[in-house]
Image (cartoon, rainbow, N blue to C red; front, side, top):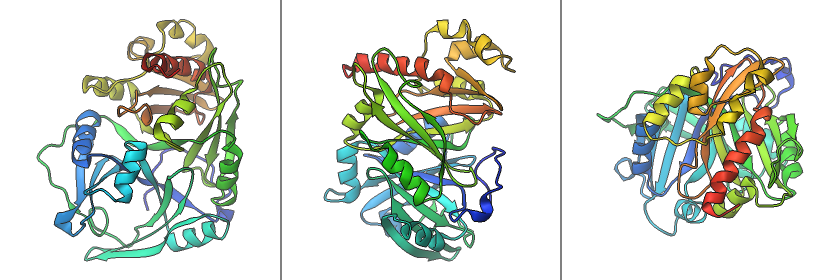
Length: 377
């Protein structure tokens, strides 16, 4: 089974890991118009058409388009009528992540292990079959209306999964170098951090590997707290953000207001060459947050030697940070829809396992400038 990460992480504790995850299989978004969203992600981000399900395949209440780039798979789903849970989700939240789908060797066991530890069941183990084999899925609820699905596909040889047909398209733009999901960040409400940290520890066997408080993540106006939860084998990481008291409204508060609740704030996507990827994404119209050019005046004094030329990093607005194991390069898009909610992070790791703590102040000041333009700071 293919591992959906390239990080070299110690797996010394996998013998006692009751929920061994093999990586992020796919991320499913509920959106207002899946056909147009698929075209946007193909055009702007370089995805290719993979599979489709809808009325033509016997699905009457929704349409789903599967797109892929390397090991990164998105599913875009829209409702076909009102009075539908998908339509209700989009009305309440706008376009957003509904399912974070985790690949496992045994989806039935994953469900039993998590529900007996207090996880609220979303889907009991269910077998989906067609001529190409079988896929077993199960799932549990997490923060807000977000769901973790467990998918077992070791006995399936088809294009995606039963119920889908190959989506053939003459329009498949060249890729942009996106590789796989590095991590997904969730925003939770006031005083909810400890509850969800405990959920990931107790229900899913994750560990809190990094913590940032309002002293680490604050500006003149706003603050937040964040804790990074990692699966037992290190293949899946879910940082969790909570608002903290500040003079004005934080980016997490703005998200919670416009998303109407807790949910996935951003998906971080790995690349092997962030300069090439971001250059290509910008040429396709993807908009990124920018930090002041003064950020780069002393950056090498802080992070030390890097392999890349600083000039293109400065021109593109790519941030740099380091930890004891190396450094990383990262940049954040502006929100991908009109509501200031979901966005993407593009990240290239050069040994670093951390999440850019040294960039927090510059990043959040950039976010605050965007909030101020929207009148939401």
